[in-house]
Image 1 (cartoon, helix red, strand yellow):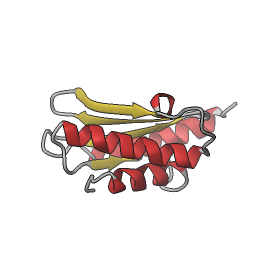
Image 2: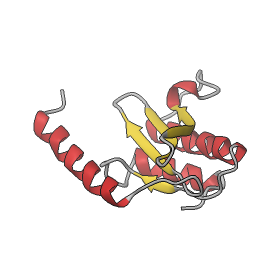
Image 3: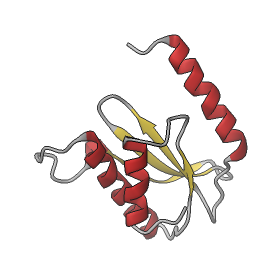
Image 4: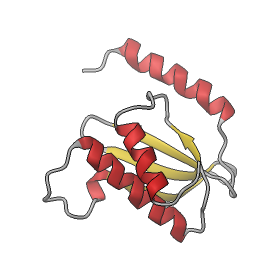
Length: 119
């Protein structure tokens, strides 16, 4: 179980980041959420308050293959990049959501870059 202090720390970091990061229609925000079992990504236009594209490790094709969580995160990055391209989005602002930029969060970002997103 995650301690309350750890969640409070991440929440403070998250709000400190969100003061500076704002997604627009031209350059939406790619938000990452990481749970113990899965990873989720959303492309969000904060001005209109809508989600333009989303992907998660639950919806990956080929779920019968054994993949590590980092490999799943990279695939989610590629999927979200494809969906963003379909929606006409070329560049984004990356929101790591209070998580450190390493491990699964970094893998997702690298996958999104490989998929053609610029940030």
